[in-house]
Image 1 (cartoon, helix red, strand yellow):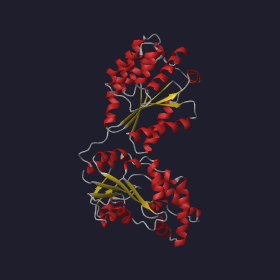
Image 2 (tube, one colour):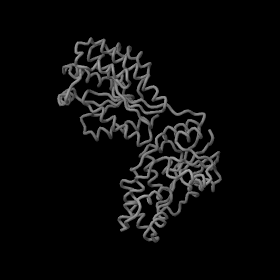
Image 3 (cartoon, helix red, strand yellow):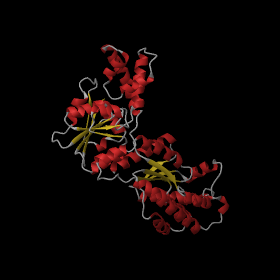
Image 4 (cartoon, helix red, strand yellow):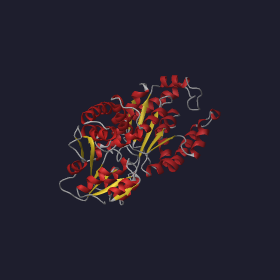
Amino acid sequence: MLYDVVLFDLDGTLTESAPGIMGAAKTAVEQMGYAGFDLRVFEGFIGPPLHGSFRAHFGMSDAQADEAVRRYRAYYAERGMFENAVYQGIPNLLRRLRTGGARLFVATAKPQLFTDRIMERFGLARFFDGVVGATIDERTGDKVSIIREALPADGGRAVMIGDRKYDIHGGQANGIDTIGVCYGYGSRAELTEAGATHIVDTVAELGDLLAPEYQPSPGFFVTVEGLDGSGKTTQIDRLAAHLEQLGYHTLRTREPGGSPIAEKIRQVVLSPENLGMHAWTEALLYAAARAEHVRAIVRPALAQGQVVLCDRYVDSSAVYQGVGRELGLEKVLEVNALGTGGLAPDLTLYLRLDAAESLARRERASSLDRIEMEEGAFHQRVCDAYDQLAASNPQRIRTIDASLPVGEIAVAACAEMDAALARR
């Protein structure tokens, strides 16, 4: 490891916070009667203390700036702090540094109150040994003193990472190296003029500089299961949006399918034209598609550290072919073990729906595939098998009531996802 102690700025370094900061500042000045300004002026509010920014950019008096900060805070506390996203790749970078033995700290001019809430909301708190922000009035916490407070007493090779000159100057004043990141809100010219020890353009480049001997962490494999009509596609889309806001690279895929060859097999196995297909032919086609999909798509994505969200996987074959077709659950699992090479999900979200409700939803669909056209008894066997599978694998398979409103299902699914990532 290049450094034992790594300090991060928050805005523009860990999180892409411009929408919330700029929206709060714009709201504050508009409420105070200012008009005719260039919206780009609010870019200057990212980084330095608010009070000084209102004075510098709008010529406010101390009293006016105090009022502007109060109005800013009202907007920011309600919604602005969550108009935010973690930069893609940051969670894997932090895990990589922790694996290498580095101690991690946040040193930000953002008030501690908001910093703590943001760190928790976006899943960052678990990676850090300490978080130091400013006081709520921001006047007693300049970047030099904040960094000084964040540095551990027992020392070690330390570095301050940030996107603005304030971060670089603060690190220099405390006698430590600095790294300027150009993916944030500063510029290479600003960071160069400030005298940053190192300058990087991307999160990946930052990881290679800090921990060249430690490779990115492997990805996370999530499958979503359930009867037809349970809302798997909708929830996968919502999960992907949630994970991307937390800084994870995601891949959405499906089975059967997900790769060019597997998609061709999908057309054969689901086509109503092939109603006479033998049950074992169906099972083997699913396994063949899975073998191609895993090797061409899933494993490469996991090797790159991505979170893979897959609509159906081996559990579907176990319940649909093993139990629904009555081929035998264990026999179907044996066949699929060859296809997957032993790759198992880290987490499975089972969207549970009664067979009767699934039928009602299927009947409202514009068209049905070959599996969906099966009789009710088939789907009841599948439903019962899913329940038994979930009951026997409670650590991996998390059951969510798919009869709930879509928004409530999404909240539950995201909570299960966050808990699984935290456990890892």
